[in-house]
Image (cartoon, rainbow, N blue to C red):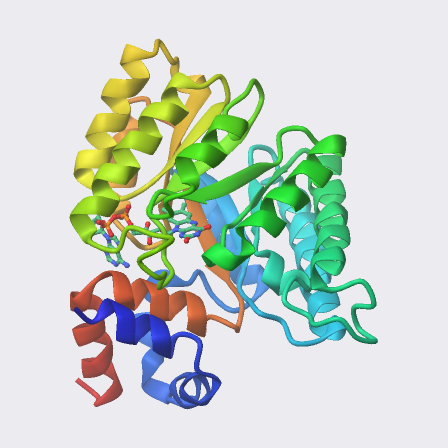
Length: 314
Ligand code: FDA
């Protein structure tokens, strides 16, 4: 019931400024965000690595409004990759990139003469070159449904140089089975998620049960395909079904992995590792945490209650 209003708030800059200025939010935010600095991110990666968990790092930010912001995000990823390399943590690491953070939402103008999509494409290529040059990988996050075509076009461009660049697809979107048909070939890495954005009924399933069913249908396509499957979900039923589908399709542990978000079901992440499963944790860090954090609140009402208590000092 609260999902829609929370997601609407996630895009309001006025509310963002008020929430991020409140001194008491820190403890709650820290549950979901590895920290604000590169050092925080590398420290979190070290801990996860010691627990046998792989990582995908997200330098937080989205809907960047100017070229300088997009360039700063690219530089943050380059610095991150250097930091991971210096710490000896770059192998098997991945970076997750939102195209709107690297210029995808810029309007045509002096900052983006050929439009935001062209800026984002070039920036994604720069980050991919740095990642693959250091032995890491890159996956493109998926944002709301209006961005899917641009994201898949960018994916095709960056895959010319780095064929295993991955992409997230959202089970809630009605188009996704069709997209998967083109994305499950040999070498293709695809992260299947339920979808975190507020989408209209004509493009997406919006009831929880429908989304869950759609996820399982997409998971069947993914596991039956010839690519590398990344199962992005904390849902116990989906985790169970993923294991069974992998066995049905004779997928060895090296051909698929679970992915979960930093701070969510951490015990389950470790339990799966102990069972011999590959698990990758999505690690967000940086100061621009508001949009990401609000989507995590929207997913679970209990998080919202916890957050509101912290705001009033409880
Ligand atoms: P569901 O929401 O049903 O949750 C199942 C269980 O997981 C809950 O009962 C609870 O125990 C736990 N849980 C889930 N969310 C929680 C939360 N916020 N707080 C506390 N517990 C929680 N989306 C997108 O649109 N584009 C993207 O690129 C990505 N990328 C991405 C990467 C990775 C690695 C993951 C795991 C997820 C994403 N997502 C995403 C988010 C995704 O679309 C979805 O919103 C969340 O994963 C929640 O869905 P679940 O499948 O976990 O199920």
